[in-house]
Every structure is written in structure tokens, then in C-alpha cells.
Figure 1 (spheres, rainbow, N blue to C red):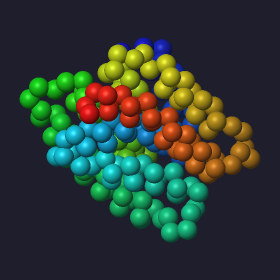
Figure 2: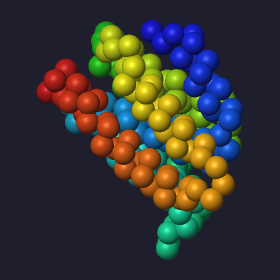
Figure 3: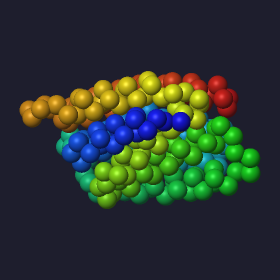
Length: 195
């Protein structure tokens, strides 16, 4: 269970970031737990939305970087495809007859994916903040107190709150790259649970 103090600090951080930085912050938080969705889908072939979710989450931080061929329309299409798959998968997981730790965790991850993607479509501080808190809840489902992920989030927030002149597009790229590396712990945990 997440402490009220930690949730309060996350909410404070979310309220202080501009909308683009907040979205990058939430995307990184969700990306750290995304392997839970991937491994669950490998074991349960009826859960197929991980790849589309990954593609959409990777595309969102590319927009501020103004990469060739990356347009809001293309990212929006990826987000719509990911939302459709994640919403379907969440319905399937929630209808499992005997949910266990794996189902609890994947439901949290898919919920976080849906929250952050919807918050990108219609910018929402509350939606991004809820996505971050939901991603942290995945650690709680393991019985972990989420200190490591929480510390990573605070570090991310400090980096995104730097003064003017800081190269934010590079920060977004570095943030996503680091979040993908830091997701290895969730990949290993889910593999040990399901494979």
C-alpha cells in the first residue's frame, strides 16, 4: 500500500510540471512497469495489446523532439490503437474467475497505460498523476514498498524541473531510455511468477 505522504508528494510534483513534462514523467513511470503487461501477454495469448501500448508510449515523447516523420496525427493513431487494445485486455483480465497476483498487477499496469494515453489525448494533470500512482501500485502488489520506483520518480521530477535553457527534448529521450532500462526488475519478477 502506498503511503498518503508519498501519494501527496507525487500529486505535488505533478502539479508543478508543465503539461509536456508531466506527460513525459507519467509515460516514464508507466514504462517502468510495462514488462508486466508484456510477460502476461506472452503467457496468456488472449492479451495482445502490449506491443501497441509500447509503441504509443515510445511515440509520445518523440513529439517534443521534432523528429522527422513524427507528427501529432501519427502519434494519435498509435495512441488510439493502443487504447483499443488495452481497454479490451483490461476487460478480459477483469473477467478472470480467480484473479491472482499476476492479474492484479497486469490490471494495474493496463489501467496506468489507459490513464496516461487518455491524458495525452486530453491533457489532464489528474489523469497523469493517477497514472503515476497506479504504476507505483504495481510495486505494492508485489508486497514491495515501492521505494526504488518512488526514488526514480523523484529523480525524474528534479530533472524535468530544471531552469530555463535546459534541453527538455533531450531530457525526455534520456528519461524514456532510462525508464526502459529500469523496467528490467519488473520483467524479471513477472517472468519468475509466470514462466
